[in-house]
Image (cartoon, rainbow, N blue to C red; front, side, top):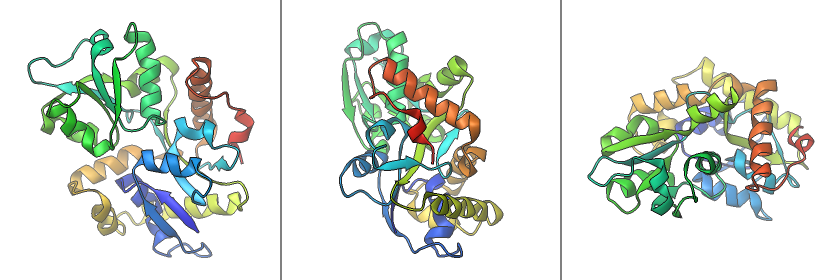
Length: 280
């Protein structure tokens, strides 16, 4: 079975047991590790993987072939994307100034960028100047080095951005939570509709439970793929992004996804979604 997910600690932690043949009855996995912008594109292609991690914001474009699985993804509170700028002279600290600024984002179909666009509609009169897509690990160096004026970051960057001399302009997760009182739907696990979706969901849930029951078993695997992050940062990352919604999205999680996609479609940012097609 072909699967694609990111090398980030939360994904490798979640899928460690299945990847390493520790889930009875689960098929062997052929894994592709890729940045979220790449996996979003893979799912939209005609020969995408059987199972793939994508941004919730990319769901409207792939629901004809894929179904959202109720587990394995990333939702939560206090874990949303951050908009950062530089501490150096000339740093852009007033959101209104983004109208004439260059902003780096991790993917045009990322949840981070979708939240940013919804936030900017309220806070940046006239819209944002120029958008540049960069792999998420290149964004903070680009802001630091003055290649862009601001950067939208995700994942472990919320723990490491001060080391780059950067300053928080906006926590888009906090903005979303205050506006909706719902968790932030970040990353989704989807599978081809032609497959046994219930079985795949069961294998993922078993992998999540194994990870929680044996938290040290995946340490070497997680660190190997974590792009030289420290053990402390990887553990903080896992603690933040692997939670009860990872085991099962639940009613509140589905409500958050429906709210995000409905609001985005009303703003003309994504195609209108038949929300019934989200479910197994």
